[in-house]
Image 1 (cartoon, rainbow, N blue to C red):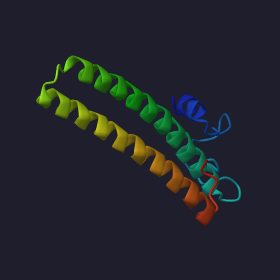
Image 2: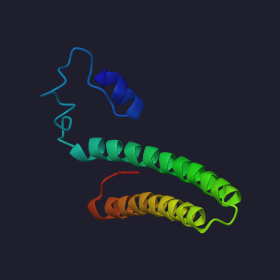
Image 3: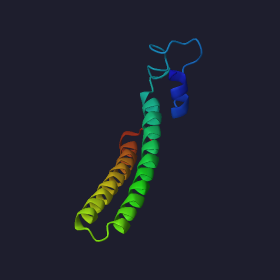
Image 4: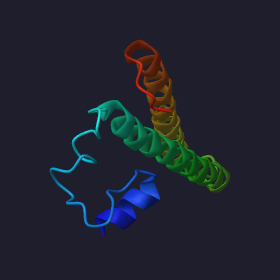
Length: 114
């Protein structure tokens, strides 16, 4: 199971017969390069998070549009719809901000994140 999850995430797996823990894979390889493994993991998580956040924002946008159309001028429904749209936009903004912060950290620390 661990090998399949690592393969899906794009993380290299240990060689067959090599123990999972205490091996050169989990200790950073022969040269102790933890940056490469951490960078691969973070980059995969960020890419998935951006895609998922975009899809959630799109669905929330469609729901807000439908809410505006069906509100029939009711101020309570309009306010709740606009609140959900604002919250979705804030969430999308936070994910993109995290993406740009990761790029800045990549330059500062020399970690290949993205």
